[in-house]
Image 1 (spheres, rainbow, N blue to C red):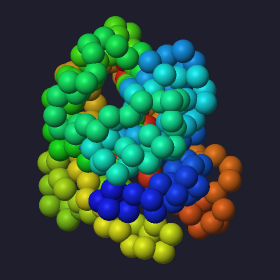
Image 2: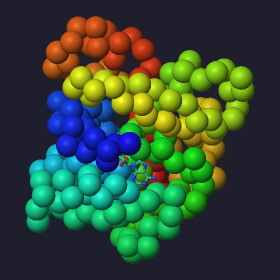
Image 3: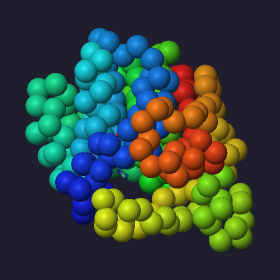
Length: 225
Ligand SMILES: C[S@@+](CC[C@H](N)C(=O)[O-])C[C@H]1O[C@@H](n2cnc3c(N)ncnc32)[C@H](O)[C@@H]1O
């Protein structure tokens, strides 16, 4: 779905309120100091977050399953980062064991139905003490968008987005709060931070700014191997 609108999504995500002024600032803050670190970025899309990680001195390997987005990211970053096509539902065979200081997964884990195999892979890829920082669509908002038949199941839901005048329907997995954290603990991660931050200044649309300040839009987690 992202790849079907690769150019449009990339330019939209560059400056959209939720991406540029809410998601990326919070994710980068939770990532901490990245200079000189080996960073594995999941769902790197057109390289918007990669650009900022690389500018802060990180050595980034970005993974995305869509070849069109990987191509855009490669052109954009040139030699400043590496990108590979990879499906997060499969083993990440291109990533050596204990090679990453940090895994960043910005708004991508809710597209993966079963977190168990992926988290086991991320544990393998991380150095001991390495961190996993991720953001997902907030479970409460997911629940409000679901048919509310059974909170405790992991459930495919959909949402309509306006990307610069084009309506796109995204499908993602809503999971209960306990499933988010139990999956991490079972995979051998310790939870270091859970955040529901306020947006950074700069959201141009006052109504969007109000929504980001007053509703649970995304959930941010930092966990350590
Ligand atoms: C919301 S975008 C991420 C935005 C990005 N972090 C940024 O800052 O621009 C989600 C990305 O995850 C990718 N994705 C979705 N499911 C995936 C999967 N199973 N394996 C790999 N990438 C996936 C999509 O192609 C898309 O590029």
